[in-house]
Structures are given as structure tokens and as C-alpha cells.
Image 1 (cartoon, rainbow, N blue to C red):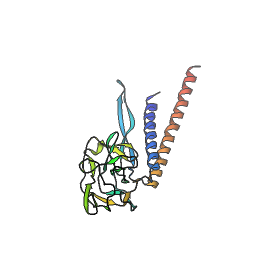
Image 2: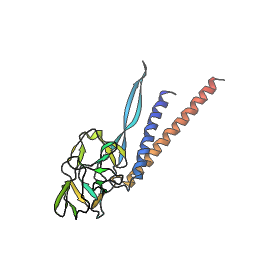
Image 3: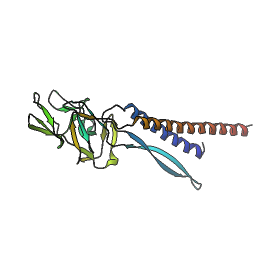
Image 4: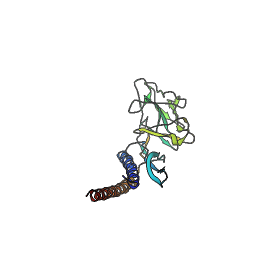
Length: 236
């Protein structure tokens, strides 16, 4: 395969990764707290000995869209939404991870957990505990939980020290090399944050990427036919 073929193949591989990311975004349009992702393309230049250089496209890096999404009222006592920057910190079998999904329930032991059973952590990194049988639980805008006026805990808000280290793990969960307390955001009780995927723009993007991939595939098919013709002609 010649240089043009290799260049087109790297572009096709990147477009396929982007299509997978778009499909994941569309599948999570209704997932509370989901964060849209995109693929970042970069140019890789390879020297071909003493000849000209070969430029190839790489679409390996992912970018997370951290823009604020809308809030939906649920009225749930343990449904929390973040308005502003920051994440909830949860404890998982793979270590501490970040999430914007704020649907929690008290476990049998009184700890607030996600639907997957991961514990919500407070501002000090300890599990948030609500005693069984506690009275009316209210959360202040700074994340302080209280039952019948008695303070229980303060839900922590965290952010990655290096935003570029944020990596999507699964669903609405992210990991980062290091985290630090987030400032300036407020917490809303009885609300959940929506997904920040815009359906119309995401579907339009999917069509654009699909067309670009089809054009690249058409070029590869024609290039293959051309090479086969040359080989057949020279072999006669």
C-alpha cells in the first residue's frame, strides 16, 4: 500500500472511533449527569527515509464536554444536582471516581450510595452517613445535610487538579490523576442534572462523520481497483 493509502487508513480509524463516541453520546441523551464526549484529531508526521514526509491523522484522544446541563425537579430527598463546576466524589472498587449523577439512596447501614452501590463521600473523603430513622433530611446550598435541624455531614464537591487528566470510565463516572475541592458551585436538593448531549447537533454530527467515512472508503476501494489493474497489466 502506498503513502496515500496509509494516510487514508489512519483517518478512517479515527473516524470510526469518533462514530463510536457519538453513538455512546446518543445512547445517553436521557442519562442524568452524563457528559458528552468528542474525539480530538492530531497530525502525526513520519519521515520516510531520505524521501518526503508522510502526514497521518490520529483520533485517539477524547475530550469531555463539562458544560452545565439543565436541572429536572424530582422532589427526591436524596436527589442532588450541582449548579456550577465540580463533581461528586464516590468510592468504587477501582478507587475514588468523579460523577455529576446525583441520584442517591441510603443503604441498610445508612450510607448514601449510587444505584450501583458506590458510596458518596463528604468534603473530607469519608462516606456520607444518614442515621436510619432520621427525621426530615434537608440539604443547604453548600451541601450541608441536616436532620431535624441537627447537622449530619457536608457533601463534598471536587474537581480534577489537571482537567486534561479527566478520563471517562463507565456510564457517568470519571477518574483523574488527582482531585481537589471545587469552589463556587451550589447544590440543589430534589433535582437531578440532565445529560448535556444536544440531540439535534449530535445526530447532525453523526451524519457528517458517516459521510466522511463513506468518502474515505470509496477512495480506498478505487485505489485498490487501480492497484489491481496495474498489477494485472504488469503481469501479462
